[in-house]
Length: 249
Ligand code: SAM
Image (cartoon, rainbow, N blue to C red):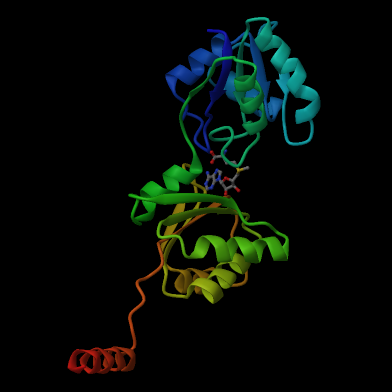
């Protein structure tokens, strides 16, 4: 079917691809990939042939140049499949601007949904999933990072954060300082891969458990909502005295 199809691809285990995703990759007239080598490799694993179909690279650094070519293909009534390097396109990956442009030009925009590290991490974290916020990557830049920590810290929802293994120890330290060491959290590493590991505890225990050696592999950090503020006994006493005084008036 003509239109732009976002195709989710595995986040580790190559067999985590849906039959529908394979159908779309097999039949799309134009293939677009964040990393053309990764997509070629994935198609090879699953016995899909590219044939004489064009494969266009579309990533953070060439979006403005590549978009017109993709939009032209859509305007010609072709079916276009876009796969990012791993997981679901647009989720901490390119694709947003492409979706906007295709929608504005009146084309069909649809998807073959599938793996995304954020949702798998939420599922296995053991933290409440009734309300959650995906907050993406922390900015490596100090000011923006501090604002981000401040902004999302008080939201009453489970938070899902992406971070590089190099910086996760620092991030856990900063979160302990601003949100408190006791907030429940889960560190999910190498999901669906051979060395998959989920550590569940608090921000403090995860920070202490990591030590100073950067863990290897890809990481999602899931953090429980803020703990209810327990009033100090003295505050309760003072409030009671004040209430009694008001009653006597
Ligand atoms: N589009 C992808 C998705 O749907 O999850 C995310 C792409 S983003 C550029 C890459 C980040 O996703 C990594 O730094 C890590 O935080 C997270 N990630 C991707 N695959 C992962 C995996 N197998 N295990 C843990 N985290 C993963």
